[in-house]
Each structure stands twice: as C-alpha cells, then as structure tokens.
Length: 165
Image 1 (cartoon, rainbow, N blue to C red):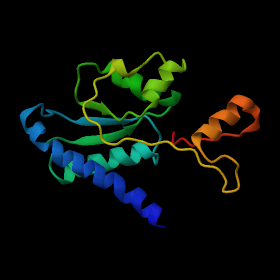
Image 2 (cartoon, helix red, strand yellow):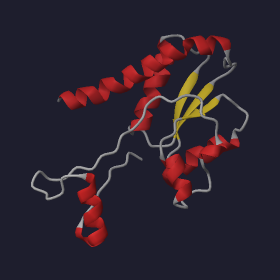
Image 3 (cartoon, one colour):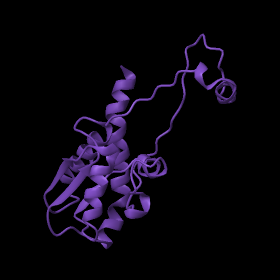
Image 4 (cartoon, rainbow, N blue to C red):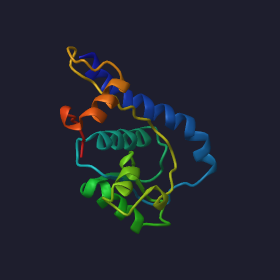
C-alpha cells in the first residue's frame, strides 16, 4: 500500500520540484506562442503517459504555460513512432516528448536508426535505477554471483523484465 502511494505521489513531487526550479529560466527563455503537443512514446496508462499528464496538468494549474496543450500518445516500434514524429518537427519547439533510456538502446540494438543526437534534451525530470531481484532462497546474493552464474551457464537462469509500452 505504501509503495502504491509512493508511485502516485513521487512523480508529482519530482515534476513540481523541477518545474519550480526551472521557472526563473523559463522567464528568460523561450515562451510558446501556440498550442503545445506533449508526445508520449507509449500507450495511455504507462509510466511516461502518467508523467506527461501530471506535467501537463501542473503547468496548466500553475499557469506556467500561457497556451493550450495536450498529451498525445504515439505508441509503437519501441518508441520509434513517437521519436520519428518529433524528428519530423525539427525546429518547432511546440512539439515536446519524454524520453527514457531506450532512446539509446534502440539504436545500439538495431531497432531504430534514431538516437539521442536526433533531438535536443531540454530537461532531466527523473533518473531510473534498475535492479535484479531473486527469490529469498536463491544462491545468488550479489551482482558478481549473477554474472558468474551467467558466464558459467547462461541457460541456467531465467531473466524477466517489465516494460510499460
């Protein structure tokens, strides 16, 4: 229950804190002249969608953006659909997108030719930490144990990940 509450509150706190810290910079820099589209490279309900909708709600409620805005989900191709759309809007700052580490890994793994050099990062909202967990009865106790077990017999371990695409 506590974890669920933190998952709801933490993005709001992070976004609000970052927005408040960025406000002086906004006053001196670019100000939108027309509708803003916040492009989400996932479907509705995913972690990036939730973050984008929280961000959009906060900048509206706090009157940080003087124009209308909308969150638009462009899911598909492991984020390639959204990032290629943003790439087509080069030079138009009224189209923004959220990015996560797949912006690096998709190009490295050959999923997409698109990479982080094709966009201009404007803010870092959060960082993500990845961790491996095992059953409490597992013989694996450290990261070194995990790597050694993989080296010895890669087929001996089952590894699963979650993604919110």
